[in-house]
Image (cartoon, rainbow over the protein chains, first blue to last red):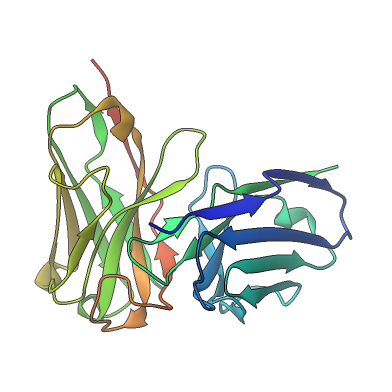
Length: 107
Length: 127
């Protein structure tokens, strides 16, 4: 199975900051990488697929990039509603696998 | 509006069985792969099982293969997960999720993603 590793595991930032979360795959996955946001007590929500396409309704301050093994999720000008957990997931090979998550907290 | 509503969770003793259901609405159910993804308390997301639109391909995580069986009834817009020989480490919130790609030939085609999720049903395995 392909292992997905996110960094950092947690991150503190302020409203208005620009933050970057990294996801690394254990082998090349081309651009087949998705990002999800999960708020406490809620189901995950698809943000970006694969690697850089924004899901309908997702604000443009979210962006994704990368290919091969290294990917990034960038959030420009953090808003209060962006403080949540973020997960990457590869869809290059079965079984689909997730990163361990990054918790974005308010500083 | 796409809606996925899970049911069937509860408290069950180790070794017993449980059947989860997910009823879908707001999209053409028999055009898309469907999945179960679980999340243990305070932990991350773990894919459990997926099935193509026509039940032609079904996949399982190693942790559940041989114990869980996934099926769907397109006439009822429903997805089912039969869980047997339950263990304490199966304790989790189980989410039903829809595949994004139309009529994919495998349960997780390259480039697919989980574009809609239900609110989950909690399974607790404990004596």
